[in-house]
Image (tube, rainbow over all chains, first blue to last red):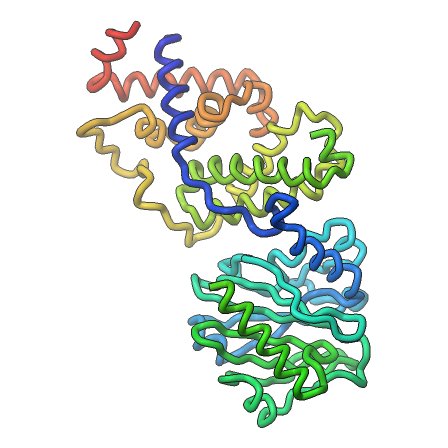
Length: 223
Length: 168
């Protein structure tokens, strides 16, 4: 029996060791590799008093991914729908690695790949979260601009001149003080969703184009 | 472990790396789906981040991590669309022809017996840790291990009896 157990143990240990473990998400990487991500996340946690969440229902997204996706933009200090887990700012500060992994509303198949910081505009960074949804890339760009005067409310015609392929611009957020626009466009095979609670991109056209260019560059880098 | 709990970022990163690999391997063996296993490993590591400050006994970490992982696996299994990886043996239709090895035989066990075997022989958890992970008495763990061994020997006897006898 002891010999049998020994063989069993050896076989199972070997089978576990033979499993090819994929790379851990960026927030679990060793310090040097993940320092930039951590810095971005910590800055994010410190900068946003409004928390993540995005809501948009979309035929365009449904066409893109074969099902209706929902994103939510909500602030943590407001009543949240029962189906949307609230992520408080305090909780985000305690566990900054956290909540971006799977924002409320993303489908279960959405796999967090990485978080990036594209720019600092005023006091709010513009952050993007790379996901794979059904094996296809989705870049969720999120920002909570604290200076309404600086914000840009997407205009379809203007957006089309900035983005390569605008899929959809919609008003989805029902908060009284939220512009709630979302701009979705495609770069290559990647869908980019810019969710704005109070404006995600700069009001300055040249700066805005530069922001989008950085998004595109980052996406190329991701590939 | 203690350094990670004290806030040492490097120690925490190392702990998370180890936990990632450990939970992924366990989840893959339980769920047989790389995608679901990654989801479980990710959620388990988040649970580590959130739960580490509250973990009183560092020696209980493995049992706690196993329990968390298995609970997440159960949640994954409750989903109707869990797909199986063709590279891992399924326990459907026990075809034992050919070179059946111990690992494949373990896959043929029911999950009730398979998980304790994986934890005990594959990941070196003690029966006490497994009892903690599965939230069952230690005696039940020992019984399941004994039952699993009995079934494995019965399964393997037609093909492996001779080699086993040679080495004993």
